[in-house]
Amino acid sequence: MENYNPLLIDVLPYLTNRIKDYFISKSRFDLANQVDNLRIKGLCECGEPDCGSFYLIEYEENEEKLEGFPFEEIGTIEVYEGRIGFIEIFPSDFGYEIRTTLKKNNISY
Image (tube, rainbow, N blue to C red; front, side, top):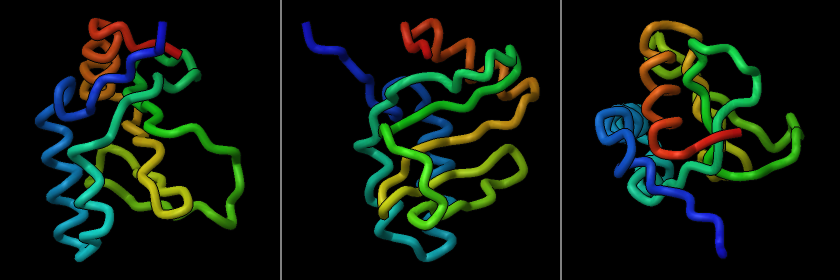
């Protein structure tokens, strides 16, 4: 059976729209256009209960190909080779809410 990765917009529509608006405000339409089709691959593996971070693609750590964006004051967005790959949501009440929502949707490490 193929592993099903839900669309970000189906699981976290509010966050999806915030991410899209963020990239539009930065005139990064190439990234804003990706947002509606992003699929959640898994939770951050740190184990912190208040961490809401999650992966959208699988990639190797290679700082030369990584572009980071400070996302509002709640986290960062990592773009790898032109693809949005990781949403870091700092440990917080919002992070806990995101992590809880992802787990309820059977998204794990």
